[in-house]
Amino acid sequence: MANAPPPPPPPGPWAATFALNSPGAAPVTHTYPLPAASEVRPSGPVPDILERPRDKLRASEVDLGALQFLFAEMVAYAQARVSGIADFERLLSTMGARVGQRALILLAHRKETSANPKKPRRETRLLPTLLWLHTTFWKAVFGMQADSLERSTESGRSDEYMISTNDPLLSRGISIPKEMTQLSVEAYAAGIVEGALDALGFVRASLLTQPARVTAHGVPTAAYPNRTTILIKLEKSVIDREVAMGGP
Image 1 (cartoon, helix red, strand yellow):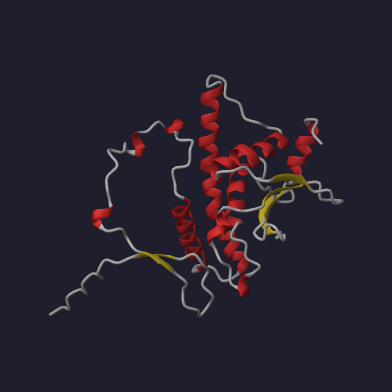
Image 2 (image 1 turned 120 degrees about the horizontal axis):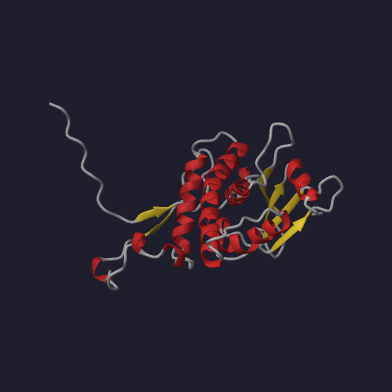
């Protein structure tokens, strides 16, 4: 006679992992008890999110703790499927690129329907696009605009732009072990930026030119230990196109 399946585990508190687990170390978790049934009080009927007007959902409706819990699970998912820091960041970037492409479509749709829906237009100049990314796009995705947008002043690196944020949203709920200090979980944010720029036609790599890339780098300071810079390195064809259009 076949053995009966084991009974399901009893209900208990859910656990959120807010730290990367070092190899061979026990996972670090924080548990939060679920509220008792008497503490849950309905606040009235809530319309289905699919029935709400899409173009009016501009305010954030996701709690920060829930977002950090979700991102922590994404980091744990990526950690279990890579063998090094480079692969780790590459996977996070790939995951973020999909979000960037979809966020761009939604924001572009909202912009055009609120401005001139009969004559939609797409920005083709580099600097206005980067300014829009570090303000409007960044605020829509992360709840606030980035702190600075700079262009590299070093010789031979005029094709590099940097978007910096002093207190990255995603890094707040992640603890990096000492043996993985080179890891930047903000590679996910870099992927979001790369996905948006790729959809706009600014960082699509070509086999005939130097490929573009968007990477995240930690630049901590005494006041902002989590300060991160998103480095955007453009391919030569984008710079040549900008010069031909009268840009710097």
